Length: 228
Ligand SMILES: [Cu+2]
Image (spheres, rainbow, N blue to C red):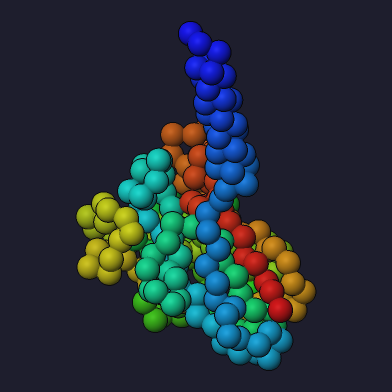
């Protein structure tokens, strides 16, 4: 092999390794699910209302873990469902939340997580009916929870009837059996990242159900970014 050919081979090999390193850093260390912005055009600390729309599914057929249960967030400008659990809201605002609950039930390990806490009026609505607690042990009726421990928020997500044929392709549409859960809370005045998660060990196939989707951003855990 001639000297120029050797040099060329070496340069190409070096660039390939460098590109791989950049990809690994970007994809595995810096990459994460996108942030859905509900704060654009809203002045913080004015009590303005923003409307956050989520859904939770028995699966997600859009990722490399299609059998993992997952939340999705609706982009307020495009109304497209995005496979992420990170959203941004203005500080000091009223957050109206709608969650379309498509997943089937899993009993809560601790009935405490069936209580509605931290919402305006201490209440949530299932298909418009006010509830302060869902008892997942008397009837299997809770799929997941939406819980932000930093502000004491916990809302159990009601599930479709046990006999229902659940949605099989994500993101689900309202043609599939679901419960619609609505509630409101006040976003904190202190800006920052507020971690949220589901409290049901819904990571099927993982020890105690707490692995997999339960510990992975984009599935059953995420951040509420509060900005001003
Ligand atoms: Cu869950």
